[in-house]
Image 1: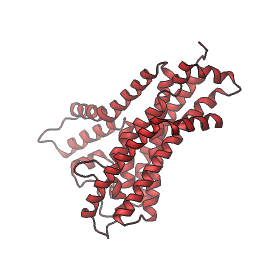
Image 2: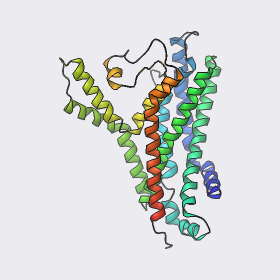
Image 3: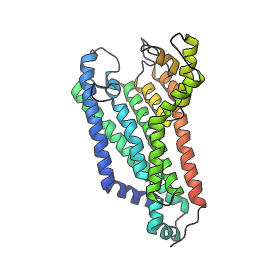
Image 4: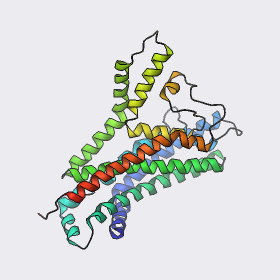
Length: 311
C-alpha cells in the first residue's frame, strides 16, 4: 500500500490538474482575504477579541468570505482527484496488471484514497497557512493560543469534509466504467447538495409549516426548524455550520430558528469558550465523519467484490 500511495502522491503533485486547482484555490483565497482585511481594519478596534479569526469569516462588498471559497473549492478538488481513480486504471488495463502482482486488492483502493486525501490535506494546510501569514503581516495582530486551536480544528474538519467528496468520487469511479460518467455523477451530487438542497428545504418548509404576514413566533420557529433540519441533509450545510461555530465564537447557537428570527439572534456579548464551541459543532463534525466513512466503505466493498479481467 505504501508503494501505491507514494506513486499516486507523486503523480498528483506533479500533474497539471493539481497545479491548476491549487492556483485557483489560492488566488480566490487571497482575493477574499484581501477584502476581508480591509473590512476588518475599519470594523474592529485593537482591543476586540478574536481579530485573527475574523479574517476568515469577514466578507467584503465585492467578494464573499474565505469560508465560502473554501467550501466551494474543496468539493471540486476532491471530485477532480477521485473521479477517475479506479475506472481509469481499469480502462487502460493497468488494474488487471496490478492485481496480478503480489499486491493485496485492498491496498490499491486504500493507497489511492490516502494519496488523494494527503494531497488535499497539503493543499488545505498550505492555503490556510499562507492566508494566516498574510493576515498577520497586514493586520499586525498575532493569534492567541485559543485562536490557533480553533484554526487547527477548522483545518481538521475541512480535511474530513474533503475526504467525503473524495470518497464519493472514488465510489462513482468504482460504480461506473466511464470516467466521464463518474465525473458527471459526482458533479451532479455536488450541485444538488450545494445549490438545490436549501431551495428544496425552503419549499418543503413553506408547504409543511407555512408562515404569513400575521404568523406567530411559534409558527415562525417551526418553519425555521423544519427548513434547518432538511438543509442539514447536505454535507455543505453541516460543514458551513461547523466552521461558523468554530471560527465565530460569538455564535451562541446553531438553531436555525434563532439565527433567522433576527440579525442579532444567536450572538452573545461574551464569546463561547473553546470547549463550548466544540460541543456546539460536535454533531456536525461527527455526521461529516460518518458520511465520509460510509462513502469509502461502500466503494471499498464494491471494489473488493467486483471481478477484474483483462480485455
